[in-house]
Amino acid sequence: MKCYYCSNEQFETRAVKYIYSRGKNRLFVPDMPADVCLHCGMIYYHGPALLKVEARFKAIYQENAEPDRYTQMPIMDYAL
Ligand SMILES: [Zn+2]
Image (tube, rainbow, N blue to C red; front, side, top):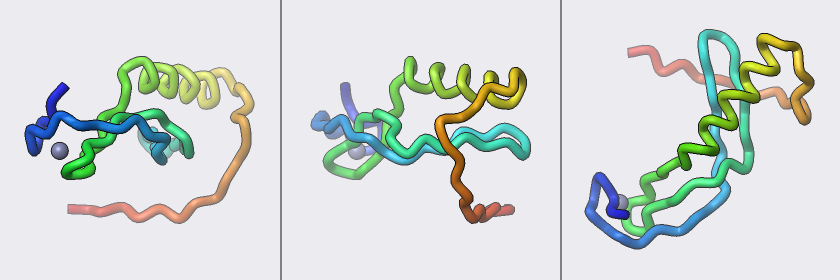
């Protein structure tokens, strides 16, 4: 694969922080697997991982499934 932004072809798979949000609901994933461009740092999330997070999000907010744990986090809305 090639970086969409800088055309670099070297990536490293890392666990990165990811926040899935829809409306006012948020799901924080502290160890999301992703490929990180070693040149510019652009993060490419894995399709299956995104689908898994989305499914978990729906289970928590629509079916009242328990998340693995809770955290409190400050949120900044960058309103343009
Ligand atoms: Zn890049």
